[in-house]
Amino acid sequence: MNIYLAIAGFLSAIAAVMHLGCIYFGAPWYRFFGAGEQMARLAEQGSPKPTWITCGVAIVLSVWALYAFSGAGIIQKLPFTRLVLIAICLVYTTRGIAGFFFILSPMGRSVEFWIWSSTICLVIGLLHCIGLKQQWVSLSL
Image (cartoon, rainbow, N blue to C red; front, side):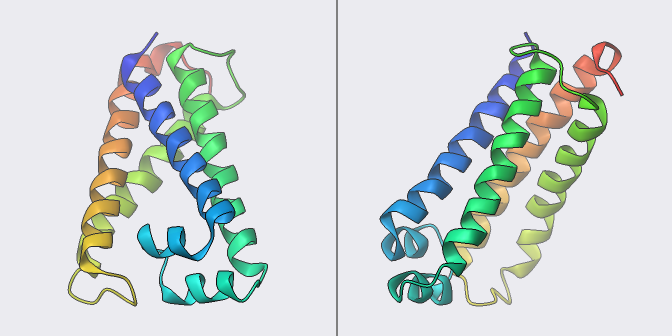
């Protein structure tokens, strides 16, 4: 078992569950986790938009967790594991790095949101990258 991919998968799964928590608990959670005031207001108004967006993010994060677990050897091998893990590494690390550039122009979110979310994405991305490098030979294209 590859510990780096296992931890990365676990963190992606936690993020997915937290997104589902936003759907369930509504506006206070959207605000707390920095989704922006517009998303919180839409949730308060009963709009389906925050639910659909957040559900989509939760599904993507869940799939990413499964691929990390697959690469770690915890679950059966999934198709295109190597290619999907490369994409996951790129998305997480790019989001992590890019987010720091939004600190000066936070686009409706707090500076703290950009610092925390970017740091978290960067750490998860690096865990994926380290694990992928270690498992490279044993993973299918």
